[in-house]
Image 1 (tube, rainbow, N blue to C red):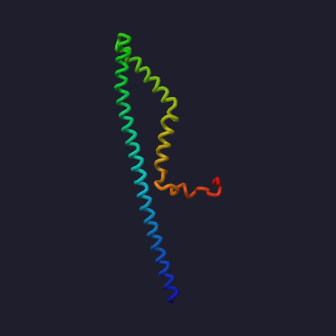
Image 2: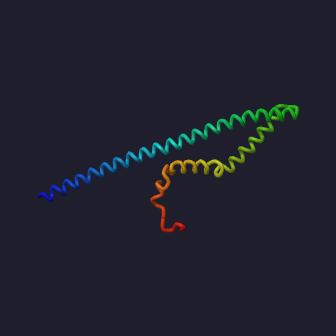
Image 3: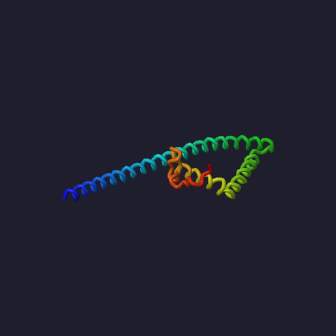
Length: 136
């Protein structure tokens, strides 16, 4: 009877440790998700801010260039027409090459931010690394 009682206590202790391990793992997963999400959102916010500043610069540069070209052509509307034609060409080129210029870099940003580890060698994919085939 004593052996059965010890075994029951051992199983109960093992169950408690497994339950605590599972809870700790779930909490760690949640904290990692929050960390990666905040890193991704802060990176996106910084890039949006930079794009907004560049857009304002481009806007005022466009106005200046339009007025300058319009002054050279003796008609301000022609200056705005020339600059808008340049933007049309740029828009067509962006549309044609949107996968390589827009989609791929954004996808790579998301992937690198979500899979990045703050501690080298401890990322999710590190556990699958084949150490037998590394160069000496």
